Image (cartoon, rainbow, N blue to C red):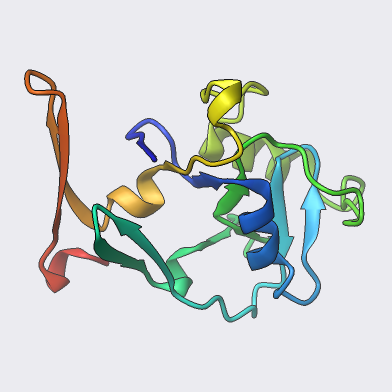
Length: 156
């Protein structure tokens, strides 16, 4: 995986993200954002990632983005290449332009993927949704990366 402090969300392989999203009744893919709109009352289960043999859990309630109007919620795990199955209806005409722009700014969606094409189907990009729950160590000199659990008081 890739740890990216400049990315807000978590991006993963399409098949794995779709299996998560398919469990949310009423989810709809919003093309303009590259995100899934989910009912705000959706109870998202915790997600666990294994990194270096260690489990790292993100509470489900931290995987939901609510816009400023409190009317729209989005799943903060997205498909790596902003292209998904056409079986999801889009809400383009329902979402106000302000909401679309707000979420685009939050996600930093530029329309291109930062991941090389050969890695796009088996790589996770871990952004702030994941990293803010860990102490991250970037050792450039030794080309190493490390994680440590934050104290519970700092995880909120």
